[in-house]
Length: 211
Image (cartoon, rainbow, N blue to C red):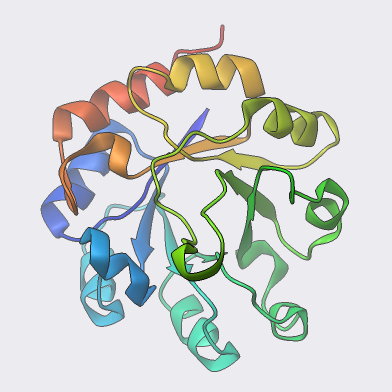
């Protein structure tokens, strides 16, 4: 089981996640994440990435960025996690292996659209609200595991997110059988600051959930 620790804002947390066995780290470049102290300036993220050990995948978490910005981020991050309403005409100009597209489970979730989207994987998260209260991620609400399992069974490469913690991640892995799991707030001790013990327990529980 692969594990992504998202919302990295400092080198200490990044190295602690790597030492605990994280397969990927997420850096949130979407300004809306400032409200939860999970935003990081791309330049600062780049300096952290330069100090990471090899074989750790780095992910730029973006919301409705123009193509030129996405190409810039692809210059120093391994993956681009697209959380908004990005134009497909822009997305197809990105390397397919770089793209992770976020879909929200709930009554508006379109499995066929997820299967057809030009991405190497899809991250399934809980609904983020609508209208003025719209959030593109990081709400801490649990994803619909039943819908996520249907997506897995349909052949989608699923990264499961939404409300995952050290306490429930093993159950989630067994229920959904995703390609990977993703957490941010579930391993925090304060907004934007990780609890290193919770990171270790999350990764251990995720990776030991299946025989």
